[in-house]
Length: 323
Image 1 (cartoon, helix red, strand yellow):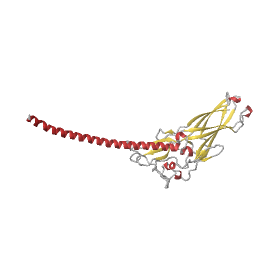
Image 2 (cartoon, rainbow, N blue to C red; image 1 turned 30 degrees about the horizontal axis):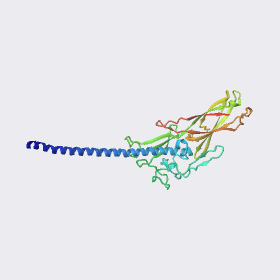
Image 3 (cartoon, rainbow, N blue to C red; image 1 turned 135 degrees about the vertical axis):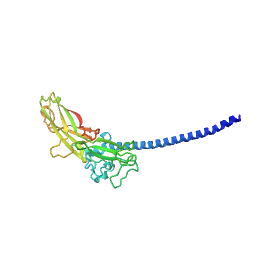
Image 4 (cartoon, rainbow, N blue to C red; image 1 turned 90 degrees about the horizontal axis):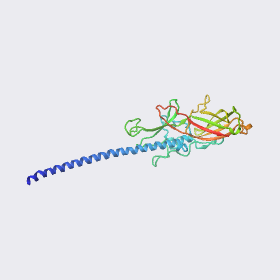
């Protein structure tokens, strides 16, 4: 019996030592996993915070569903797409505080005939979280991503070249351009903020009994914000009436020789006026220069899918008019 006891008890010591070592190793694994999980979780949170900020900046530029308010929707083509000191291309300060650039025009009404509002609406288009912003100079202020690095808003040329692209960008966890690892990779969104407009107009004058082959001239005026004020582009086309109806395609922009205005229009809600330039009173219709209708059209932004960016596709819209 004693021999049996002598052979068993030493084994108990080895078992306890092995269990202790296994428990220590197990706890070490848990601590390492907890550290790794915590580190990843922290970066996940910072990434989500950055993505949310980029989304809010885009809304501050374009407006919520292009309704209002949004700087590009309200102001249109900025006076200067690099409004700060040379080499400082980050446009973010402009939406954080109107005081960043004293030249930004206040929100104002153009009056007839276009009856259009344009300019900088209010004090700011983006409200950072408490403690992350200031109304005090010097301007411009920065907006930081989840890792504490400035988020950049820059205007980018397409291959035309024309500055039709806005890029909102965080440089990732390392704050440096580029990067290939998970959180060092840049977080960005690029989209077209300017587009041309292609309008197909269908005109129904069936109630007037116009003879087939009658030509009707209709002028279309596109009203849009440019440098904080209302601007106009107009185009007149002749519609040949057949069976009481006629149709025509209007392409905007209309750039006469020497006109250096931008070739595309900022996205957002824009106004179209339809003016009859033919006297239809002999058939019981309106006199020439009559306003047939006005329409509000939403010119949407669209994502950039090529690198370098191709010119944006025109926004195409159909309008039906009847008298």
